[in-house]
Structures are given as structure tokens and as C-alpha cells.
Length: 568
Image 1 (cartoon, helix red, strand yellow):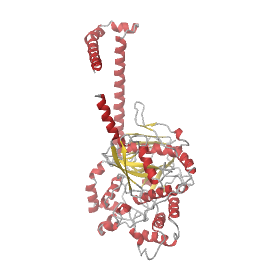
Image 2 (cartoon, rainbow, N blue to C red; image 1 turned 135 degrees about the vertical axis):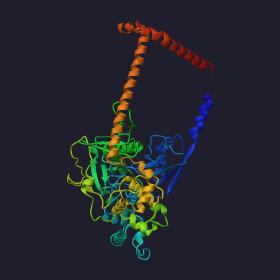
Image 3 (cartoon, helix red, strand yellow; image 1 turned 120 degrees about the vertical axis):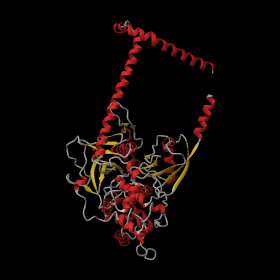
Image 4 (cartoon, one colour; image 1 turned 180 degrees about the vertical axis):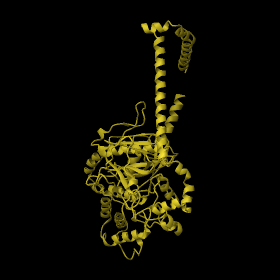
């Protein structure tokens, strides 16, 4: 029997699983791994395939069957982390954005970071003002199609490419103007370097948004950047806390807490799994950017007084160690195979979604306003007042990024439009989503694409009605949709759960103490206290009617098991 079990386990360990990893240029890398292969093994295979040495900035992301994103943990088995059935599909992405991407040692690393930020720009994660958007898109054009050539690039050529979730003719003309007049002669590497330098100065650089609700039920996006923790609401950055000022992060159910010296920020994630993912991302980012050495990394727990909670420990190197290691790289620069920019109509993998021209004109005008065009009037500043815990009375002063002086009474305006990344709540890998699903995800987040969409939703137009019908189930998944009432209900549920946990712990402790008392009383321990207990009628009745029969039954079972083991 034992030999059959061992042979079956050996065959199970030798089983191979197919893995497909989608790279930043939308190509795919396929390999096979064994059941006990760790995440580090798969990651090393990818980095060898890409000829990448500065690999600590990158990671592998996957989505579980519940549509929750995860970063692959390198110290654990790949198969055990993947709850889905094989073959497994994952994505190679930038996990820790470099503090200064232009200072990366190798061009291949800068090119991969360039591809990631280009994706961020398209999906709306890297949001900026119109002038910055036009310059970034012009850099992309120069890097991927070269100098402007009247013979190859007719009037309106920039409209054939998709740089942002939505385009306007004014923005396309500005992109073409910069590409023609200012960037001529720049090789791809130089354009990519200039692109990185410009992107690094933006408020939303390095933002991987987590959709949440604040204590008032308002939609917000939480993110961890190379410089600290940020909260984005509307078109403003309402919170920015540097990493050395973050004292603690924890979560309980759907509630995420971030502790600063004077305040506690409280936000509600859509699900407990999303909240745990948010917490783990925060722990990893703080360790990577804040610590001096990886030996300083400690295991972090989200526990309360009576419960173990979730425990997590960042297992990689920290930013300072990565930079020191990169400085020691001495090899011939690897060859880079750049994927040229292809018009969106002929290459769906470049655009990741439908172009504006594929939507009927009436619907297009109703729901599509350029994400980069300026608004005539910004929202009232009261809608973006920094949110703080109700138990703290001190007003929050958002710290500035180093080198940027800001008044404590103001918040940073990040763009002309509200921050509403197209795929922040959609799983990775991102399929070719329809226009309706993209708009639906924004409505679920509580952040309309534009003022025109907001007016439409209030007026109950057909377009809004269709999105409402299609999004009923998705909206039910998002907590806090009822505003303050939902937030209060969340607090009540949390209090009731805490009381039940305390009651359960108390009952458990009493049960353990009772068992310990019985064992000590039935033992040969001879003290006045136990002698008095043994002489009581109640103890004698318990001893002869319950304890002795139970002891005989247990001894009989033990002898039977021992004899069975001896016979085999």
C-alpha cells in the first residue's frame, strides 16, 4: 500500500503543465513546468527568454476564477497558486516602477518599461493633461515609425493609431504637429528615453489603481507608487503619503487601513480578496522602496489581538540593492527586436479595444468625449476634500513629492478629466473588450467618463439605460454603492463580527481550562485543592459514570490500532 502511494505521488510530481505568458509587446511565451516548480523558476525562464538582467522591477500577474488579480509569488509553487484549470495564462508586467526609469542600466530594461507605460497610457492608468498627452504620443510615434515622411504619412496619419482610451481630432493634430516639427532625427532609443523622462514627472506615474470606496461612499482609486501611497478622486490626487511616513497597513474583511503619524485612512474594497491583494501590494511596495537592505524585511501580519490573521513577507531584493547590482552589469548590450506601431484597424493586439470610429455616430457623440480635452469648469473642490478617519480630528495635509512644493490647503490636479482607468477593474490579461463593457466598468466605479455621460445618466437616456441593465449584476458586487448608508452598515457588520469573535475565543478558552482541570483532577497530583474536589459526590459520580468508561474505550481503540499496525 505504501509503495503504491509513493509511486502515485511520484507520477503526480512528474506531471507537466502548459503555461502561456503574455509579454509586454503582446507576443506570447509558452513553456511547460512540473507540479512542484516554484514561481521563481518560471520567472527565470521568462527573463532568460527576454535576455533581461535587471529583472527585479518585473513580475508575473494572473487572474483567479473569481476575476481577482494576483502577483505570482516566487517562493511558492505555481500550480498551487493557480486555482484555474491548466493550461495557465499569465502576464509579464512591471511590478515595481523604477524611481528614475531613465537611469536604468540597460536599454532592454528601458524598452520594457517603455512598453508598460505605453499600456498605462492607453488604458487610462497614466492620466495627464492635453499638452503632456500630445508629447507622449508623439514620442511613441517617433520611436515606432521613425521620422515624418510625407510619402508614407498622409494627412491625418496619427488618427490611425490608438494611444489613449479616446481620441479627439484636436489632440491628433497636436500629436502630428509635434512629431513633424520637434522630433525629427531622434532614434528609437532616444525617443523612448525622452518618453520615460516625461512620464516620470507625471502625478500618475507608476499607478496601478485599486478601485475602492471611501467612508462617505465616494469612488476612489488607491495606488502605490515609487514615491508613496496615493489616493485619486475625480481629477485630483487627494492624498499622498511618503513611504517613510506610512507606519502601518492592515485589512479586515473588505476594509483597508493605512496608518500615518496623525491619521488613519479607511477605505472599502469590493471584496475581501481584493482588499487582501491591496494590502499585499502595499507591503511589497513599501519594503521595495523604503528599506535599505532585504535583510531588514520582516513578516507582516494583519492580525488583531486574538487572531492570527494573514501573514505575508516580501521575498525579493529592495530598490537600493537592485540599483547597486545594475551598476555592476558589464556585457554587450543585447539586441532589441522592437515591434513597430501598426494601425489599430489591422492589429487588434496593439489597440486592445475598438476604435471610436467603429461606434455609430449618434452613440459616439453621446458617450465619447475625449479623455484629454480640457473641461470648461472643474468640479467643486469640496468633492475632493481629503478623507480621514472619523476618530481623528486633525486635518490631513497631503505631502508633496520631492522637489514639488504645494500648499497644505490644496490638492494636486492630475489631469483635465476625472481619473477613470478603462481596465482597472477588469482582469488581466485584458481581452478585446467592447465599448459598452469599458463604459460599464467606469459607471460601476462611480466615475463617469465625462460631463456628457454624467448628464446622460441623470436624464435616463437610452445609452444609460442599456448600461444600467447590463451592469446590474456587476454593480451589486461593489460595496458602498448606497453611499453613507452602506458605509455605516459595513461598520455595524464589522462591530458584530468582532463581538462574535471575542465570544468564540472566550468560550474556547473556558473549554480548554475545563479540560485541563479534569486532567489534573484525574491525575496523581496530590494537593489539598484537588483532594477536596475528589471527595465531593459530584466528582465521584463523574469519575465512575463518564471518565472511567471513556478511558477504557479509548485504551481499547489504541490497542486495536497498535495491533493492526504490527500485523501489517
